[in-house]
Image (cartoon, rainbow, N blue to C red; front, side, top):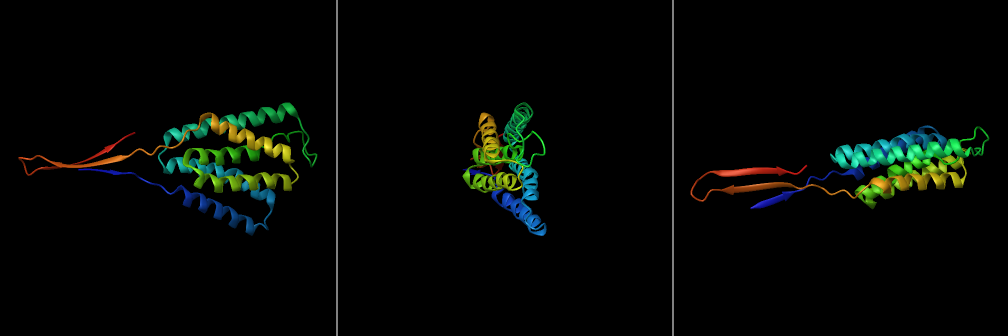
Length: 188
């Protein structure tokens, strides 16, 4: 008799907790959009990385690292080669939005690797981050859309859907004996 047990981890709850903590932080700081964007810039990639750790998803973690690195490199190269002025005139690093490329890379990774039920809340957070950059007068819509395209594109270069590995549980006995055998088979 074989039973297959699949370990399940609720990444959705984790993403909700990070989101809740981030919004709690926002309300204590008078809903300052710039601070919100800065908070999500760190919180979303960290929660995405944590999701790969919770799921013991070493392949996904490597895919996340690759997409993250490509997103950062592409954004940096474009920022310093295009030299577009920010709307507030502070410097010439407006195009594309780094905050947006990072958060959309994380959101698209969650969606591509673990499905829409994890991707949709992450996309909402990433979209809010893009909006916060426009609201803070650091970027215009073109900068934010370009950042989103870079983030999503870098994820889709490397990321595959997550396939949970089953843990097999077996129970057997020898017909002429009173001995029983219980075993687990893990696939890595």
